[in-house]
Image (cartoon, rainbow, N blue to C red; front, top):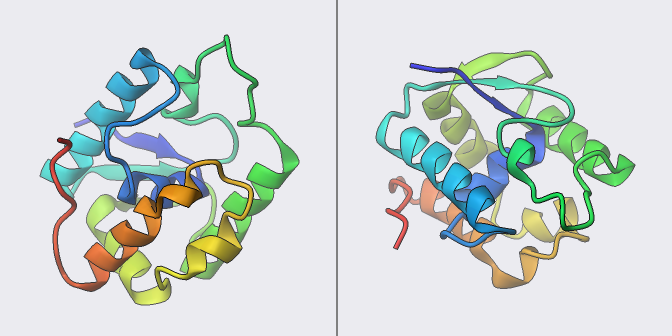
Length: 140
């Protein structure tokens, strides 16, 4: 099983993923990663700085934000709060458990104020799903 490389804020993005994205290629890639993590929570995830396995499929036709300073700062804040560091490799199951322990749904507003996806409330909903002890849903 392949180790998935993710940056800090994508740990929360994946919780709220519902099959929407920037392009068909991006959606197909994110759906594959989400599905693997959902069905095989023992999958290893290496936390990285910069472009990860999700950013790599961001469409070149749109304004690239993956390397903006504010995104890097968001990654650092999220990892610090979780007690993780870049280059840590952990199972998705451990990551989910720590998110459920450390975060509240309302934290998304402060952690991700400039995110265009925040208005949908899906990441906050994903945190609540974990806090309720439920599994992430299938992509509709």
